[in-house]
Length: 408
Ligand SMILES: *Cc1c(COP(=O)(O)O)cnc(C)c1O
Image 1: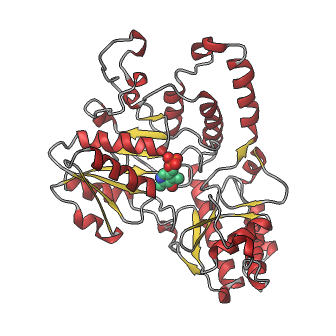
Image 2 (image 1 turned 60 degrees about the horizontal axis):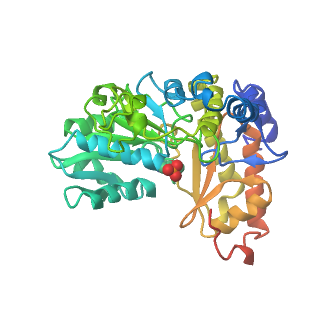
Image 3 (image 1 turned 30 degrees about the horizontal axis):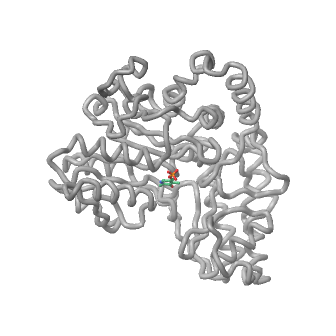
């Protein structure tokens, strides 16, 4: 008899301190959604909030809502809910914030010339480094080394180290405090990409002595498709770090309409242009909802969902050719579990048709996001049974999936 039969999993769900949060989200009936690490689900309260923002704040308040509905303070207000007050603002996309954070860090290390990262980092992180290097006219070099070689590469020429805390493909967690300590020893500043960590694992930016960080609003923060992203800059760096995207919203006095740029004193200097208010309203609902949950409980449940999922994969699909890509040990694993399979793309498409949604990352990785706020332990069993059915019936072997879709 399996350790994780349906009765055992239902007992875990009954005892789950986060169980009530599932009701706060809206899903189609019967769907098992294992992609909250890529696009979080819709909180019910977001519907009412966005409607109010559109019909009342925009439709009736019009421009007076910048003050009357506190639109103008949204980037900072949301930031203060995500991190320590005054150290994070919500703005732009993660890609744009990477540009802002990397260039800000470079401005604090003018005598150094290398932006360092690891091969296999999320593409936009590597691409933004490369763009900055290309624009610098040869002064700055972008360099990516194997993940195991990063710490040894830290040297006098490295200005900035850019890493992702939870790897998008493998789900492996970097030790933020230890890596930051090693980087600082070498005089290197670190930009952390928190896209797959914020809302899923305890981050502790100041406990880790972090310099800069960025991340997404639409993943575990449940802010909606294309939600605004965020940028963290440690207080100690704010007055000196140069905001290269020196837009008027980051000016010390935007409504003085001066000809010359003067950066705002604090974190607001990393604002650029007018904030997207509809997206901000939706994101605030996700952030508020998350704040109602205990982060230690989120982490504990996320890890348990991962253990249950991996055990069930071992039990039910052991002879179907899956290779675990994610770390099995709890402290090293984030909130998604990934497997490699030569038929990975077709398997994921067949799963979606059966109402189990995960995603696929080239060349052969299936990702299963385990979001503690809305998943149940029994969902792990139903998902694995669906995976087994797809393998046993060879449902992955379908000419419709011979060509990959634009989004995988
Ligand atoms: C999802 C993700 C991004 C996405 O960046 P966008 O600008 O929102 O497209 C960036 N970095 C990492 C590590 C991600 O996982």
